[in-house]
Image (cartoon, rainbow, N blue to C red; front, side, top):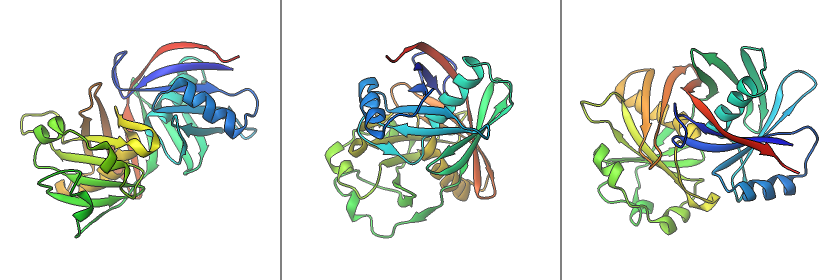
Length: 260
């Protein structure tokens, strides 16, 4: 089985979020998929398998568990199909645990159509007492929780209490703040999911499904640009279309090989 490692939401190697993309030529057991994902030990490993109707089955695994939605590994999978497999179609359709998702070519990048995740304000923020001080606001964000801090500097300097974050009743924690006035982006964020085996995710497409809703409500705009302030960093373009959000970005293949 061929595999490739792709840095997603980045224009250059060794930035953005790396994902392994495995091109399945036969069925695999869930157990083998999980073991291989642990062997890669990246935040996500994507498994892509061509279906009879021309769509692709797409599944995502962290080193510890299968997840329902992953943006950067979907971007990586689409990038591999177009660049390493020379697929001629300009749109790809994926069958996933979150329903059908699509990817389209967008200039020299890729646009992913994902479900928009509605955020809802939490009046009681006591569960975050050991997570962060001086919260501006807190919200639910689908499978995740979201907290807003006062500034981009607060996001950059945030030191996560991973035990406290893992104890939250959520897949992970999104922290976010408005970008500085001189910035070329609208907001910044970071994402932590220690309970899923990801202390900090470099660039998180699925989190931007909720960030899109959160910041569109606050800023009154449907077109946004977000920057994730992890050590590797990355940018995600956002366009809201009804109950969907189009996430856009670039990717670069770093390496490839074969699983025996």
